[in-house]
Length: 172
Image (cartoon, rainbow, N blue to C red):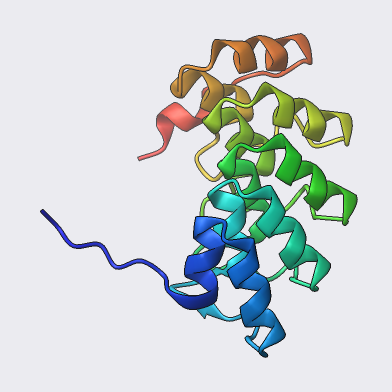
């Protein structure tokens, strides 16, 4: 069995959703923006779907629009975590819905399609994200929904005018 190192301290408690421990560490002066392997406490809590911990971190001033680390930012983690409640918190606080990872140019809508969340995809579409934006390989959100076998998201995107490009098939 392979041993996997996990974050400890603030990031570990954030990933576990232990809001009381997170608040205690912050009250004792822990840096809310500290990172471990490119991840922050907000990214960990968002990716693991812990709304109370996310709310506590946001209330304490965690940066929702930091420079992407390892090609993900906090909002990307929130979308990929698949919790509409957490995504709504980010949207209410002005998250950049058009942010893309700098290497692969994957958008928030593409991430919602990848995890199969119609609710998050609809939230983003209602706020005006480009439904047919392409990643660095020419794939759209509709392509992601098809690739990851999420027929409900495929239907939503098609109804809203989503298209697929053939360009991504030609990428080496």
